[in-house]
Amino acid sequence: MFILLLHYEPGALEKIDTMLDEHYAYVDRHMADGTFVLTGRRVPRTGGAILATGTDRARIERIVAEDPFQKSGAARYEIIQVDPTRSVLPAF
Image (tube, rainbow, N blue to C red; front, side, top):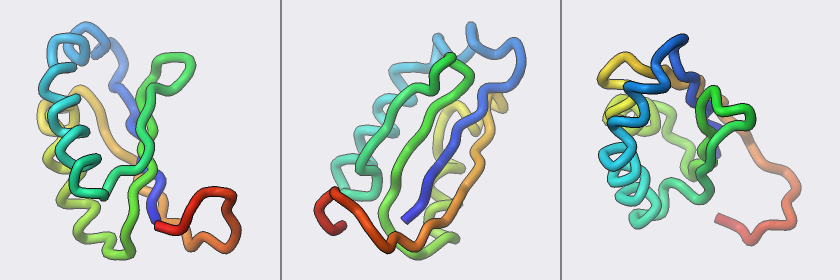
């Protein structure tokens, strides 16, 4: 599994807001294929967080490179790989 932390670049919030529809389409596509299982805004609004399934880091790197926020330079991803050992969530 992966925790994907999205960091907005300083001063990019206005640009981020203009790309929300594109970003949501990107997120919805990966929710539908089962890769993303949880997404949300960080509080305060400095970025976002995504919980993603899988063990192939290269695949996850390709997926985050597709995000309009990342492609435009308005945000960057931090990718944290996790090997879950306990959960109250159903197995992925």
